[in-house]
Image (cartoon, rainbow, N blue to C red):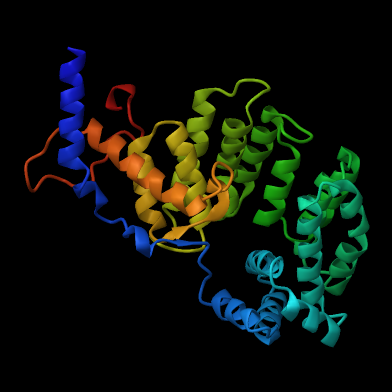
Length: 346
């Protein structure tokens, strides 16, 4: 009987896998951390040693109070500067008090501090840089997100962290990056627990604006639980609810939209760990060509290769659970109960 089941599973995989590739870009079309149309030219110019496009981009986000875009662009520019910072040094020399240059400089300094074995000591030295960035634009919540990351690395106590959190949310109550930083601080791997992490994420999601990525914060709590382990057990229902909420948020954005790409990649990881293969396949279709380093760099030194390998694995799992269908049958089956596969489906 076991041999018969194996033959049936193999037949289903062979018969169904190819058609489940519909809606998925080819491997060579998938890009890792592809910039959007605004950031791309700034990165290209930085590669030539020119800072003006980056300066203009961040100035635009500051003047228009585009805090979410500002945070993402500052992080990506700092990531680029980790290996090539000539353009940033020239920018700082030309405009030492530019709030946008100060922001990238502070983000870069914190990242370099985190990477060092002497992390706590180095991070404490960069506190003044964060303060300068915060003073450069009093409305900006992004320096306070950097301060929250900095506080976690310097072992700041809850009272100090709460003061920084208050400064952040006073400027932007629903800022996604600040919420992610707070969630990390409250995780079991740092200064909280799985319960605190989920409680915070679920409250934030309830208070979030419609369509905000903060609504998907519980799936980050689920990721932390699934990857860190230890501590109290989180009920499967709570993990599924977090995934369901993130699926609903993902559905509010267009397919192959780079803005929610990281959340969709994260959600896919969680769905795979929960063995919700059909839901994971649907998110892979929505991701399109926009693979992101996080979360795949947490489980592999080759995040793009890990993403592509996982895509193939998800297709195989879904294919093996489907009956062999005649031509013309629906190539994108749904589970018919909120997308969640029953235990007998896989």
